[in-house]
Image (cartoon, rainbow, N blue to C red):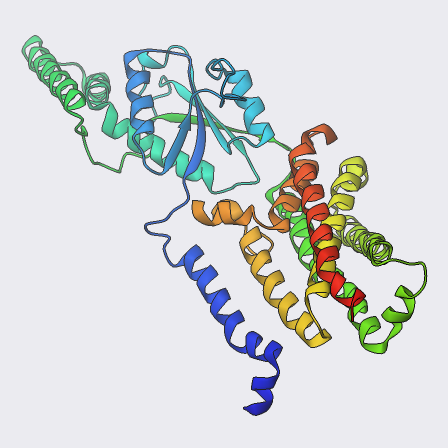
Length: 424
């Protein structure tokens, strides 16, 4: 016990690390029932009929969806952008603004519901990004639910038309009863809308609205190809952090052996010394990342060479950020044992929250926002833009800006912390 008490690194790993991991994964998985991540969906209503407006309002009332009918304004003073169209919605899905887009076509209101094998029902187009396999399923189910709860009169009318078609027709008296009943139902629905009440709570009825699904991002690539590129980036970044912290630990070895004092007694300043180590660690991390993606190309058929420009930009920026992170850890510690304990704790927490162990889009919204505080999240998002969305290098500016800013900031802090060796 005395030995464990003296070894603070081992003490942290024994108690703090398990508690931290338990808290993170309990937050992600333990509250799925009341903390399900909301799905962003772009909605385009080309029909503008009463039925389509009812369906749109029904989808907007779903708490599990974030319905977007227009792109966000670029700045506060900018004029409000126009509503999405079918083409701009497809472009937004390709850019990663939302994983799903729903296009309600013209003529939808004439025959919105299709029962059984009725082929005359209008089809809503669902555009999806295959990198998120769960979002389309959620939207599909909630679309059918919204049709049941927001269009009761339309459903009743379409149901009676279908029944009349297959039962041989109704008598004039029966038709009058049906019409009177539909009129009462429409009146009640309008009153419920004005009062803010829901018109129903039935969750069944899957398939009453026809949906044509089309993947707009990498249509010819399978889901496994996306997961390969995701994990190449996710696992690569996590081990880059370990490599950078371990390599930066040479600074502690030099301080313990007295080599650092002899180096600083020459014309080499601490700033130049740390800058040299930063360059070396950046190159080392970049080479490790190249090896990771080359292995993915050789063994798992990852499309690597056609994405070289984007990979080079993201790889160097990521390597720079993790190298600066390693230097900061080494500068803040006094021994290798401290560095090992602190780096293990921070890197595993960053990797779990930042998406290296579990995709961020499956996490609760609060955890997704917390992940943006890590290097992992920004690096993975950038590599996904390169290898999955096939976006040009110019579209990487948010990730590149953040990673470079983080790298510069961490290096400046490391330089301030490392001044302790200049006065010892």
